[in-house]
Amino acid sequence: MKERRSVIDLVWWVVLIAWSLTILFPIVWDLYESLKTNVSFFQDVWTFPKQIQWGNYRKAWVGYHLLDAMVNTLYYVGASLLIGTFLTALNAYALTRMNFKGRKLIWGMIMLSLFLPGINALIPQYILMRDLHMTNSLTGLIVLDVLGENVFFLMLLSGFMRSLPRELEESGTIDGASLFTIFFRIILPLSMPGLVTVAIFKFIGLYNTFLQPFIYLSDSSKYTVGVNIYHANMLMQYTNDWVTMFAGVAITMVPSVLIFMFFQRWIMEGATLGSVKG
Amino acid sequence: MNMLRTDAEHASQKKRSKLLQNASFQKLLFLFVALVPTFGGYLVFGLYPNLLSVYYSLLDWNGISKAKFIGLENYGRLFMDHYVWRALGHNLFYMATVPLITIFISLVLAYLLTNKGYAGTAIFKVLFFFPNVLSTVVVSLLWAFIYDGSFGLLNAFLKLIGIDMNGFYWLGDTRTALAALVPPLVWAGVGFYIVIFMNAMSTIPKSLYECAVLEGASHMTRLFRITIPLISPLIRVSTVFLVLGTLKSLDLVLILTRGGPAGSTDVIGLYMFNMAFGEQVQNYGYASAIGMFLFLILVGAKLVVDKLIPDRGYEY
Image (tube, rainbow over all chains, first blue to last red; front, top):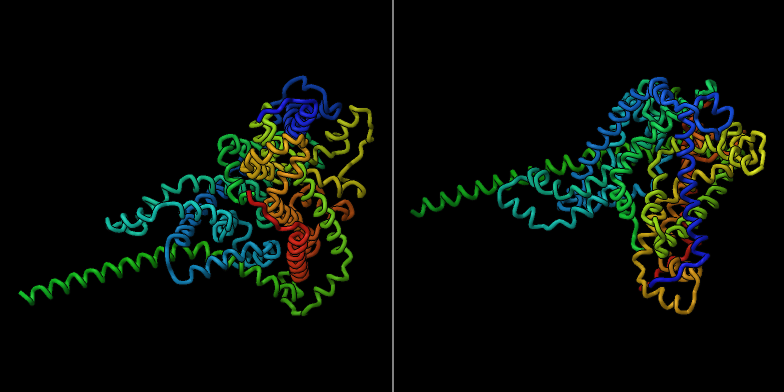
């Protein structure tokens, strides 16, 4: 069914281009200004940088302690992601492929979490963590993230594991393999695509979390990248060092850009997994 | 001989029962490892704090001194609190604008990308999704640069086309700050809905459109008469999701304006946040009461959206 292109098509195409520009412009603008000096930026935001100021990136990297923040983030995101994905896989396996008393009840209680807004748990959660002496600690944040249920990830992995044939476990049992062997040697490798999707979404989610690290971390040496750049921006109001700030924001974007570049197909397919057929 | 057989039988039975015991022990151990960290963690760090917040809302407590039980006093205060209602008004404004604009833009763009087959469709799709992987902090800062009065992109652009705003701070003026937060909220969310709408639209059989094309229906007619009704269940779910998300969200507002200037962008979640973790006051009891109030609003909002958007699916 091929239709002839008309003037209206041109209009629609312009609409698509326009929306693309609203996305590209702020980002390109940030990169563009990050290569200028403050003087030329203050004079006129449009002028081309006379000499490209790569030094702004060094200034941002050193001045905002971005290395420390990146290491903190790597620890927080990496540990949460690895432990969290593994625990979710165990949990999904037990809840979909094992029979035990109370399984239905557990599913029901997990589904209940969809109705909890989460936001009013913020305070009791904080008090709880304070009583456990786990505030102002990246490990505390990992504990908070890893110990819990996430319906989206659980459903994703359950759906994946449900589609594996039963014979896999049966033949494993006959060969005398233990439950743990079956899980590690058969189920986990076969669920790899699901695990990767969960890990990617966990990475994006964790790298982008702001509220929890913002509430819990009080030492600036423990800041994650997001919290760090937020505080840097607050200070920028006094220093007026705009171009370094532009460079800092650009550096903060790098991990997101990389993950999106490499896993773009996984991410966009994963996004549709949660939705039902229209 | 007979004796020997029974002995052998006995031994094998014993062996089997030991194996069974072993297997059931294994299962128990596996279940323990598989359920305690996740489900147990959810009970301790998810469900329990949620229940606890009901109790906290009945306390007069700053988190340090001894808590005092004051019954429903916090709720009484809440209803008299002008700031709560002001924040709620702002929430209503965002609820009425952000989901509607987001869904409208996503539907149109998804339709164009699915049915028009323009050059660069694949690139558009990827590009449109990109803001969704950016963190709220980055989105907020990018938009802070756009809205800045002296060096902002928006004012620079307006100047280029002949409108001089004289260094107008879009986020610093009570008249514009509230509305200025709508574009970043929409900008950051649209990509996800484009992808899920595109996915749903591509499952609609082409034959359904052919008849309309023969009768000379325009693309707009096709979008509103065929496509949208067919994917209405998905639109409904998306609306609920967006409305509830908009009600709960506070980080973008927190980063961009901190609820200012003069509280003109304060939202209920942020008001609660400031009550609990703010610099001046620490009133966990009152903040929890606001949290409970927000919970009730969320339930109410879900019911209202369910009523407003008819739940009818079409078979095809």
